[in-house]
Image 1 (tube, rainbow, N blue to C red):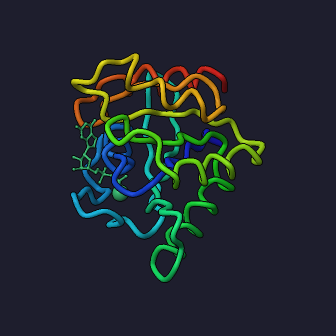
Image 2 (cartoon, helix red, strand yellow):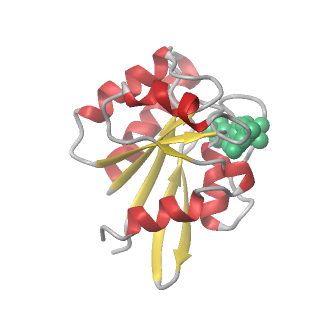
Length: 162
Ligand code: GDP
Ligand code: MG
């Protein structure tokens, strides 16, 4: 069985961008429009000899009606399906109420969770990360998925535990 990594977080934090990096594909739909990925999407990636499965999700808004409700349901299912969760947050937006809500859920799961702070390109790392220490889900890890920065280190670190 390959390790399964779920990408979870609010819409527009860069989950599909990271999915594409981790699967070397352009399959996941990336758009400026929040909430564009409504279904879970599975892809396969490999680093060195270690293959893995990654799941892209639509995102959790904290305002779960209609499509938002379905997206949240898919995200919760992805967490169940996964060995590891990459909880993605936006280093530019800072900590948002919906992030706190997702963190509350993740604190109650048995899964290994990494807080992944995306969009750190051009930001002061100390300032960008300081917000996210308060989440209480371990040391936040900075990346810039769009620039492929930090992605390999993060994935290797995660896979080294399998
Ligand atoms: P999702 O809704 O979480 O899947 O987010 P997307 O992957 O669709 O990305 C949302 C927006 O954030 C797009 O405009 C991306 O180009 C942008 N984005 C993603 N990663 C980065 C990054 O590392 N830096 C910056 N500055 N923008 C990014
Ligand atoms: Mg997406």
